[in-house]
Structure formats: structure tokens, C-alpha cells
Amino acid sequence: MLRLQNINVSFGKNHVLKDLSCQIDQGDFVVIVGANGQGKSTLFDVIAGRIRPQSGAIILDNVDVTSFDELQRAGIVTRIFQNTRLNSVGSLTVAQNLAIAYYGRRRARLVNGMDVLPRIKAQEIIATIGMDVSILDRPMNALSGGQRQLIAFVMSMQLRPKILLLDEPTAALDPQSATKLLQYAARYIKEHKITTLMITHDPQIALHIGNKIWVLEGGNISKQFNEDQRATLHPDQLIGQIDYQSISLDLF
Image (cartoon, rainbow, N blue to C red; front, top):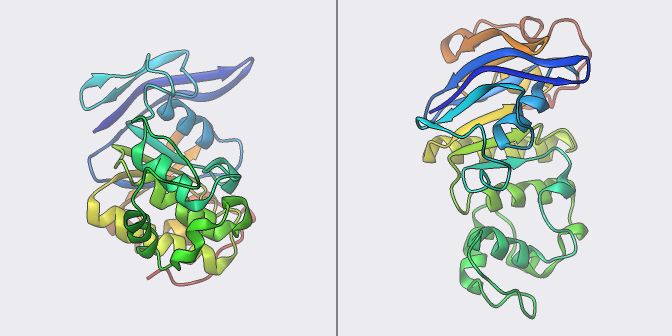
């Protein structure tokens, strides 16, 4: 369980998060929506330890982790960014990236492409997302955005984090790639009961995935909806009359 208690974050005179409090239970999949500049990414920065709030507390499984920095939380919190190039090492092969993710903080050497992660294990990992094993020897920066993001998700699951942060993971993807990623991620997250928060600008995604929806406005959570309430919602009830581009495809 993750609790944020009276979190305040300011940058100069800009008060981004304002006395924000919330609770995420084990296995929750919370989708966070809101217009630009409402504090969504800052909230993720606080949870990940990238930013320390001026006041408030972050409690994970009854342990106060407020003072933990980003490195200290790396084994607890995993984040996937919308920029696909931030989620992997582009100059390394897929196999090398998988090895880094698989061994995490454990000592591992990457020699001649990859000799620390058994080839059969790398093949098993890549097969779970329906990719041909030949992709293992290709550098990450030679792949499409959709391929990189899907592999990034698989990488993030190798050490099974307590908290998964999906920071607009489909924003840079075409509709087909976005749908494939969300279909796979939603099934995996549900099957393994991974506590997840996801930011999206697309209300259609919010209405089809997860078990809770939060609307972030003015640095705080202005609305909360559970899975039963979601069926009766209209997109405008989530983010109002602002422009958005939906993936416009059925997720399930």
C-alpha cells in the first residue's frame, strides 16, 4: 500500500502539488487524467524519488520513504516514460538491455553482445510479447517506438517492482502500437496484481483500463471514480472540453 500525505511541491512561486493526499492499495491500477500543467508528472516525480516535496510524507507498506532518493527507490518503483529513448540504452542490443533489466543491481558483465543472460532465457522473454528472436541482436535505437516501448515494459517487469509508473506510455505511438502495448500491459498487470499508476491524456484509454480513475486539477485530485462508476462516464466528465487524440480502437 502506498500513501501520500499532504504533499506540497513548489517551483519558485508555482505551487504545483497542493496538500495532495491519496492512497493506492495493493493491486490497484489507477489511471490519472488531467490537462497539461496540473501536476501529473510532478506527482510521479515525487513517488519515484526524483523530487522531494517541501512538505508531506510518502509511506510505502508502513515505511516512511520520503527521504529516499531516486536510486534508493529504484528497486521499489519502476517508471516507463512517454519518450521511448529514456526507457532503454539505444546503443545496446535488445539482448543487452534485457540482461541489464534481468540482473538489476546485481553485478553482471555484458561481453560480446551478451554472455551473462542465457540465450534461451532472453528468447523466452521476447517470445512473451510475440516478437521474433532475431530482434535480440538488433540495437534498441534501430527499433520502432512501439517495439521499444513494449520491450521496455517487459524489461520493467524482470524484477517485479512494488510500484509501476506508466507516464503516458502510448503518447508517442501510433494507434496500433498503442493498443498492442496496452492490451499486453493490462493483462500482465492484472494477472500478477502489480500496483500501477498510469498517466494519460486520452479519456478513452481511461474508460477502458484499470480499476480507478483520478482527475488531477490544480495540483490535487478533484475527482475519483471506481470501476463500477466508469461504465456511466462520458469523456468530458474526466478532462472537460479540451482537445485530445484518442487511439480510437477497442482495447479488449
